Image (cartoon, rainbow, N blue to C red):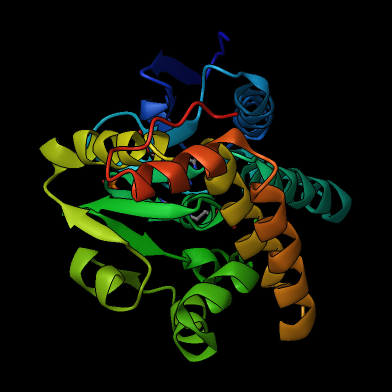
Length: 260
Ligand code: CAA
């Protein structure tokens, strides 16, 4: 996988996807979004990859938003198409059967905050600044921010952030549930990799089914969501990892999961 604006490193069962447009603070233009879409489809299909980490190059920015220079002249129909491309990427990340960890360095604004919201887990550096500053540009969030921010941190807090365009720092992001963990910048990638390694050590079908149950179940009413969970719980018993995991417990030893 070689791309113009992305770097992909694959090591120890994880893919590290780095958005690499440092001169534009890793802003998301059409080509970067198209490459992200392609990279996630490839990572989903590659059996050598079990967890994906996404980050931005450099210390200053994860992603400073959708590319403002590219958006400024768009017509209404072109802007709608651009938003749909962003939505497609976030949906592909959510729909990817493998866990996706955002390692968020520096500014995560607008489309950058929305990209982090599309990931399953957010580990952030102490220098992080999250925000949805679109109102400063005369627009609203267009890559799912009005929906996912409200779902993650609640309607009231999401409205405050989106109406004011204010940025939140790492400790506030942690307090309101936007960040799972805050670490110094120089430990960011290692912390994400350590979490990825922990996830990889588990039965991969169990992790995959858990992601599916959480994402899809949250869109359903509780009875149907519980039914969905029961189906996936049952499906776990079709895997060798379930037999091994429970047998290992009974034999008082460490389980040896094979992803089968
Ligand atoms: N798009 C395009 N270029 C961007 C960018 C963006 N979102 N953010 C930063 N850049 C570029 C700047 O234009 C600048 O380029 P030049 O050197 O060629 O002038 C370069 O990155 C460095 O930026 P600054 O000089 O502004 O750096 P700074 O340290 O003074 O400020 C910042 C950093 C606070 C992140 C500031 O750049 C900023 O406010 N950026 C815009 C953030 C924003 O509004 N994001 C939302 C975009 S709209 C959106 O995302 C819609 C959506 O939901 C789909």
